[in-house]
Image (cartoon, rainbow, N blue to C red; front, side, top):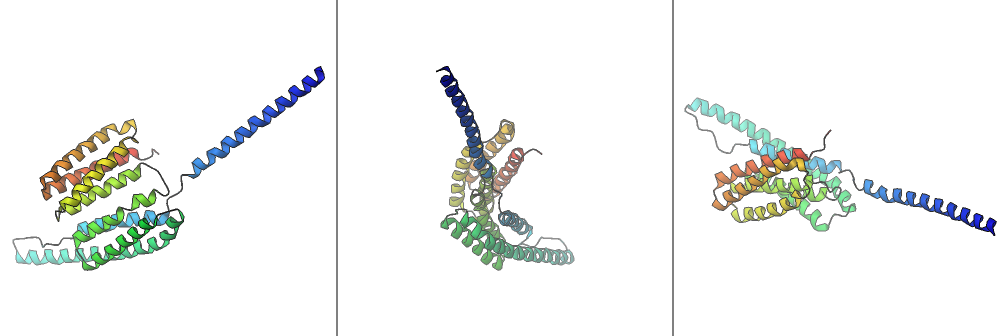
Length: 261
């Protein structure tokens, strides 16, 4: 009887060891999907983002009104230089828009496979086509607005591959730029909607911020308040200044969130 009890005890111990080993393997198997969730963002999407930023940067260089000078000789010289600079920027914009088309053509099936909704795909395609048409007409303000219209979908597309807080930063960047550009043509109704979205996105982002971001977060929060006041006044000069401060403080906040090397 004692031998039977010893044998049974030994079998129970062996079974327990196997069970614990199995649990460890199962735990390891469960941990694997968590690491695989950090899918690398496609290089085509990263390139589109950089190209949109480049288009906006080039468009800002364009001067649509000739500078006033005291001498006709100087005026002609400045105008010639200004025309040359404008032409260079427009050529760069045209080339970069073509690159956006090319990279979107490659990215489209990738994001579709990743589960992008048809509405998102169609909206991105339409935004790229719209930018192409306005760039051809060489309207500076339209290029700024429509290029930013493409940037609107960047965080949504990147969200298919990542859940990083920087996606909220990019959403806020779109809204800030939209207010900056549209204040020039005084689209106050659309700008007011941007303010609502800024408030909503900021509430979400605040919960994800580390303690060391408090100072930058407070400054950014104050810039939102100042921007709201400027928009309420419907003064385009004041709104543009406050939008630029908003974007500057947003950039500072973004730097705090960057991974430490």
